Image (cartoon, rainbow, N blue to C red; front, side, top):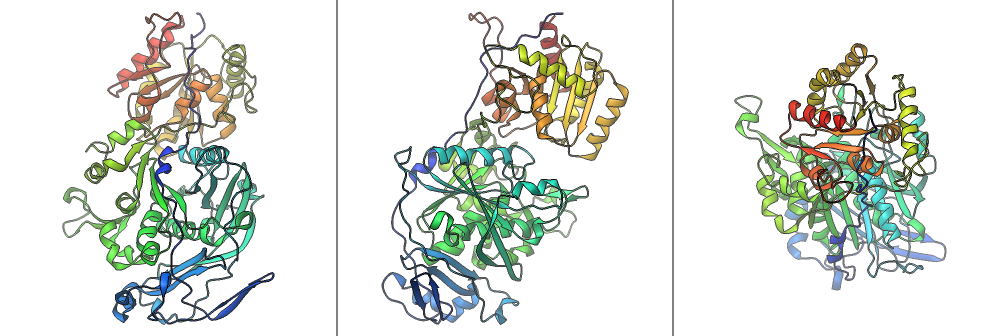
Length: 601
């Protein structure tokens, strides 16, 4: 049997700068002054006397607001306004609006914490791009600090890529602690002497900020007891955490305050920011900008971009939870969601709910998906998960930009996790990686045997059921198969059972391990991805970077990034970068995999 041929022209996409932020306007900061607290704030030789003003007091010039907004009825309806806080240069350094609720009516004197006085100065270094922005990523995970999939990879590498182009970049993410070794990832993050009080869920919740400056990026971690628990960022072995709406609501509120209150590098980011809200966990950010800040002149020049990594997850909760989100009552319609009759739990169920992602789609200035193909799919009934009509109505601001990868971390010529380095000019090291992987996992060491791999979440979306149903027939071939991932218990148990049945051919690693994922990518001949839908996918990009053939279902970002191989093309080595198949079925997966294996004979 000969060696498996690998197409020489593998795709390699660098982390792509989001070009759509160029349309952001750049005009001055406008707002009104302090409305709360009578105290003197000082720092060094600078001081500022703040006078307490009543909510209905009339202000002059840029600090004026309409008398209608100052009426008692409006105050009772919207809640207590603490207002903007500014430093001596006029830059906003804090803003609070307490939503109306029975609990909060008795709160008369709530401190907002210490103010940092700073000037909005120009950056000393000349930017590498003509126009630079203050960019704020809001995300539930960012590698290497937290990661469950592609979202963590993108939000860990794209900010660095934007920073190298001269932009000032901040990433805001929770500080997850579980008392284990993973806590060491936050060892270099230092607590900032600034706390923020978040008014939501019927009370006041104080969050602290930790900061690490790395690779030209300000990594800001929101700290709160709700982030300190075992498990993943979203759940544990018993399922999703029941308070996820609260946890990520805190994240969004804190992320909106961070550019105003954190003097990172000596000065705040200020109001003129571009917020990139990633998935439903950060989707409340555009809504907060529109409902809480802009009506009072704060963040009026900021822009928000909603980045949809997976539309299937929308942050839907009971309608009664809206009052806990810290939003004015009149904004309920922006988040209102009604389930169709067939999806309701019982005959008396009205189907009323709140959908955080829907609110972001309504209020965001731009909407991005992580591939061009996925931006089209989500406007169809099949791929829109009930939001296709709304997304179609916003097609003018809906775009797709294909994800990229960190080519420094994923580089076979320098990867610290693999047994032997190699490059497109010398692939001999790849055989050594294959041998080392077989030895590590206890498989027979057979360099000539085709080795197929799968890396990903074990769930219905990833087509794991298709793989597992195809395994018995694939095992009749001269082949070895390796799976790495965690997810639904039935699939984890299924992997364990297959390993006991096919001891010489199959290995299943339940869990996720970054070094092992690198070694599988480098050591396998084929990487299979039979996803039912895939917004972009990163593993196929890693595979092509490492000379491993991707075999993918032709959908979404997989169709955009993998060019079907044509061995009969005029070029000597053929044309294409992998194999695609459609429709998705067990038979098609077996046929394509068998075809590739027989090419190596």
